[in-house]
Image (cartoon, rainbow, N blue to C red):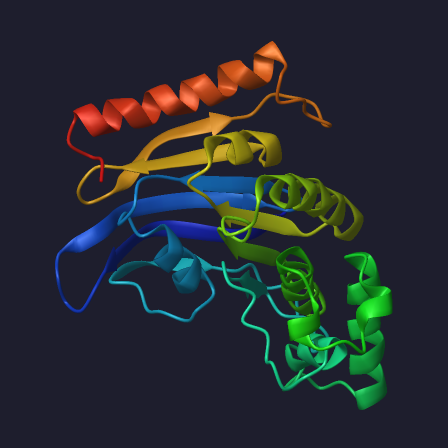
Length: 253
């Protein structure tokens, strides 16, 4: 299977201080869904920003295989925990904002934005303002804005953590549908072990000081996954035990 990104021996440090994350390596293939879990302060969010080329690493490299120049897409798109919609722009214009700077005509940008909104189930909300949307709808717009650039890898930084449980579970299912329909690879940061097992094919556990990859789980459960099934519960327990061991060893919060 082709590789979307190859992360090699990545080290992250803040302001010239000691590393918070060291020796992170992972190869992410096409159509893969990977979650990263770990306690606060291990550099999970910064890891996404380094991959997206928004922050320079202290060491290592992020290698994106050359597939030729495609002006109609970007290698990465980053979805933050907060939707960060521009309140003075209507929904359609917020989605089109992510397409600015790409060599597309206005008509092409509009079409792409409409397609992305339809994909997240908000095709009839294009003319609304952000303040007219619920929290879940704003996060759907956030996803649409990222998907509109047709990224090879979608980076998600705890995008559902601020939502209520019902909305969070609904959007988790929707994200799996979007991954299937678009064929996009996903790298998803979360504190929620249940969420990680529900979504991912692979869960990478970070721990220690500086943080390193301590476990690399394969989630061998077919979709759709049921949270009450014994196999699901066993996977969550294994993850929890791995993180508990890190706490005991001094790698916790």
